[in-house]
Length: 339
Image 1 (cartoon, helix red, strand yellow):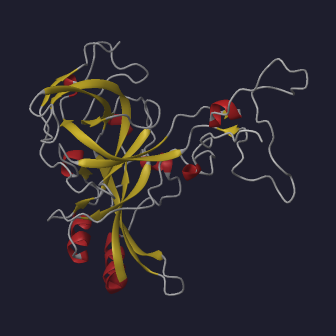
Image 2 (tube, helix red, strand yellow):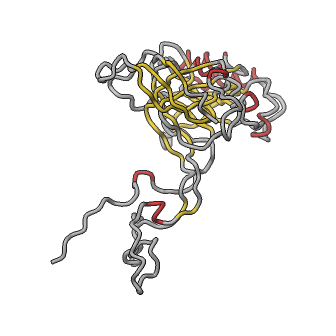
Image 3 (cartoon, helix red, strand yellow):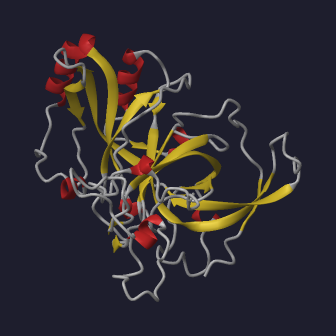
């Protein structure tokens, strides 16, 4: 009787299917309700700049380094103000219970760059007629969301066409207050400091760096087979893919797309929110990015995606029981060593 071979399975089944993301703008499927005491957007969009390390004072009382300076890896994101284009009301479909759009109101003045992304927008919107329709369907509404556009011209990525995304308006339970807040924002800008605060936790949603078509060794970590046997039909492959009838199991490692998947990383702490780009700009600019030109945010840890990739930040959907609230003390950012 031979020995049973034990090994961990190759690759996580929690991220199937491993296919290319449908859009480079992340699709956020879940938004949490957070009681902030005032209406606010529940998320924000930023561009990935690069990584550095930050020297911060450890503020976890359970840590043996409490009160001492520690080094943390961090990511810099450039977050130019978002422009609110429209406010949209959602209700429940009586046939299936899913949410459906009831009415929306667009800002009278739409920036010229937005028409690069939405080519079918009319020249003008009748705001008065849209507001009357909103008042008529307001008793059926269950959610209020804002249609916002990024402003890449204000960033250092050398891009004109903005990204369009939808962000819920929350912070208070009253739908009337959220709708009033959204209508007051029509055509105006929202800064990241109005949405998040230093020291708070956020979820980061982005499309990862694409690696193209890869084999099973790189894609799933399959063991490389011996290369000496005359019967081998290859060594960077699986020994067998199992029975083909009724079908090959979908859990079997196979070659395919690797990277460019939408992924979510939970509970990243905001170390710093700044308005002075000189605080994070190295001499000569960031590699593969350039110079930060507008508001920025420094997030602890790494962030999915390549430089200049759009990243969506939201309030955490599953925060820890004792989530930090106070702003951390950032002693130093390692900007000088970036080349």
